[in-house]
Amino acid sequence: MKPQHSLLRNGFTLVEMLVVIGIIGILAATLVGSFSHVQNTARQSQAQSQVSEVATAFNVYLQQEREWPKEWLTATEMDENVCRIFQDKHLLDLTTWSTNSSTVNMNSLDRFGMLDPWGRAALRKNPKTGSANTAIAGVKLSDRRIQYRLDTDFDGYVDSGEGAPKGAKVRASVLVWSRGPDGKDAAGQTKRYPGDDRLSWNYGQSRAGR
Image 1 (cartoon, rainbow, N blue to C red):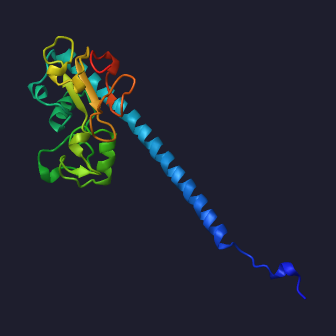
Image 2: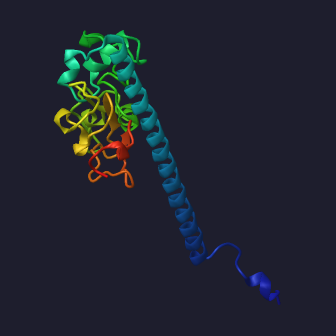
Image 3: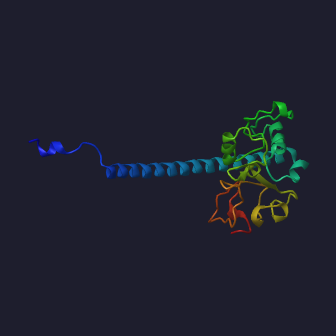
């Protein structure tokens, strides 16, 4: 008679396999969530650096020229036309665009102007996008452009009459911001709860929205 233990089958039972698969699924979901959080945090940092760099470029331009270009007075975002002036003045490191559509580099990440990190990531995945009004993942690329408002009356403040966001009145020559991962201006943004937008100024500076 064979020993009893030799009659036992080797291998995993169905229940054991399901438990192992479940554990692997939980670990995978945790890792994906952690990676997504790290990725978004990195993009927030990139956007903060970006808006600070743009605000500095605006201020340097004003110091050099003593006035704003007429094209900037009616614009509110870093589109290709605004960026071209910065490029010509060597205040921002940007790619040169061609007015000849047959020679446009379709892989250029700034052909629609200065996009925030989320816009640049979207365009990398969709390099043949032909219009800034194209929606990628539910957000138009034009909504991913860096936004700005100028002190057009040179009173030392950017206020609601000059289009300051959310009614703020800030002591500055220019306000620059990124709309964050959702591509929308944060609602109810305050110093304590800044939302997901990245700003070139401390929201606590404003006389409104505290």
